Every structure is written in structure tokens, then in C-alpha cells.
Length: 368
Ligand code: OSB
Ligand code: MG
Image (cartoon, rainbow, N blue to C red; front, side, top):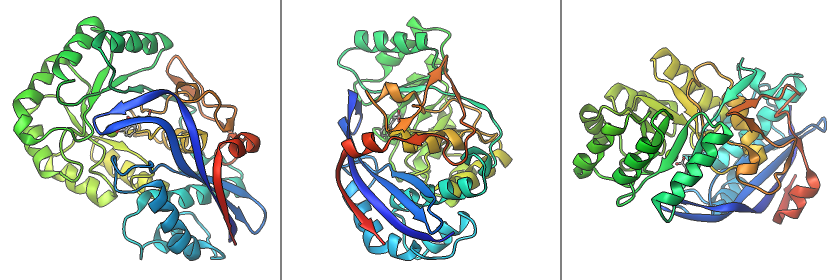
């Protein structure tokens, strides 16, 4: 294939409910949507999962647009590409900026899967026909409200409940949830809100039989996480600390993590995500697919990735309707009793609703 032209759109979609983590609250989701068109006319879609603020990672919507326009798009346009794995090599002179790279790479994978007449899941080597999913729940105003929300999602059938924690919203919250829902798979995500000196507090979480604690310590740390894991019964799962296969290897070798949350954007694309998956499989590290409050396009890529065999733990890829009144794909992603049926059509397997896309577009630019 050769990419003939690319359109970037600055999107803004209202979340149904605000989503609060230890680093801040999102009420709307601003993100970049990218459409790449091959010289044969095939369209592929990708989403940059960077936020409008650099709180989860240093990348933002604006830095991603700059990277795409000034560096990445000029490198990819009109280049002969025989397999999407080459995109990582084409971008190898550019350091980091993984979410920006991933937006293009995802679109190239979508085109490749369509041209080879297979679902994106199959193109990636995935075999599952259905995937199990959990749900991630933000920080609430009171424990009572949280219990009610968790109860609702358990009744919808989600296979695992993840709740956000931060200092002052942690041990009592988890104790209440465990006492109220003794048999449910529960985990906590701190988004880097603690330091090793908080070890005595974090050890109290061992009483609640949590599936794991996600990213308790600094976003750039794997040393203190290793020290913490030696003292904790609860498995640590790294999210923010892992940007590549090399990061994963070092964290696993050090004993900093027993489970890895793979996010396509954070690791720079599907090719790197598959490599991390394969390495983890060989090393008995279960993985699951994280979420970034994606629209249907990013969600479709997450569904496809999750069909690989070592995605043995439920991910954060919930139904479109958990986030949006109306998603930009058809059909929307639907979880029934915590299970999503993987689409079998070529490419991402969902149709883009161009009218809906247009209605959420704040600005757009075409590159040829
Ligand atoms: O740490 O996994 C995270 C949302 C925004 C930023 C970071 C994270 C999250 C979530 C929500 O946990 C996942 C989702 O439902 O898409
Ligand atoms: Mg996380």
C-alpha cells in the first residue's frame, strides 16, 4: 500500500458522566481522529488517545497534531508499505510521542486488514470470537454513591470492577467494596498517586483480596515498584510505566510487575502491543487491554487486540453506551453480561458514521 492522503480531525465528545482519577476530572473527551486513504481508495481509521491536558502522559492533543503534521505524516505519505509492522521502523527516527505514532499505525493496520480481506483481530493473530470485559469507575463524591454505581455495573454483568483510588480515597473505600461485594473481582488503580513511603498504607489493601493494584507509584518508576511488590501480596500491574517491549522486559526482570496493562497508544501502536503480549506470554505474565475513554474507533482497535491469547484478564473496554449518548461507529460496541462479540468483517469491523463524526468535529485538516 501507499498512503495517498490523511485527514486529521480535532474531535470533542461529551462524556455521559464526569470521569475522575487521582490526576483530574474529564467532562468531555477531546481527541484526534485520523483517516488515512490508500492509493487504491481504501480508508483506514485511527485515534490518538492523548488527552487535552498532559496529566496521564506528557502527550496532548495539540502536541500530537504538531508531531503528526510536522514529522509523522511527511514520513508516511506516498511510502511503499508491504506490512503495518514497517510503520514502527519508518517512525524510528522520532523519539517517543507514542500516541501520535499510534494514530497513524492503527489506520495502516485497518487498511492492511481490509486489503487482505480479514478482520483486524485475525490480522493481529487473535483467535477469540468473544472477549471478556470489566469496567473502570472514577472517584465519586461519597462511598455510598460508589457502592450504588458498582452495584449497577455488577448487575450489567461486567466481569471485573476497577475503581480509582488516591490518598484519602483508598483503604476505607476498598474495605467497603469488599464487604459489600464479597465474591466480585475487584481491583484498584492509583494512577501514580503514591510513593514508596506510603508502603504501610498500601499493605493494608492486602486484606481485601484484590485482583491487582494498578500503577501505585510514580509514572516513570520501575525500581520502587519492585521494592513494593516484594512487600505486597496483591499483584502490581503497571500502566503508565510501560511504553515499549524494552520497558516491559525490564519491569518483569526486576519483579516490578506481575501483570501488564497494554494500551495501544501508550506503547506506540499495535505492532509493539503484540510484541509485549508475546513477551508476557512467554514469561507467564497475564495481560489485559487498558482504556483511554476512547471513541468507537479506538475501542474497535482495543477489541481486536484483546482477541490475542494472553489477554486472559478482563480489560477496560466497556460498551460504547457507558461513555457516549451516541458513538461514531455502527454498530456500537456492546458488552452483554461482560462479553463483547468480536466483529468478523474486514478491518476494524465497525462502520464509521461520517455524519456523527462530522457533528463532533471542531476542526480538520487534509494532508496530501
Ligand atoms: O489509568 O487506565 C487508566 C482513563 C483515563 C486515563 C487513564 C485511565 C483511565 C481509565 C478508564 O481507567 C478506562 C476506560 O474506561 O476507557
Ligand atoms: Mg491505569
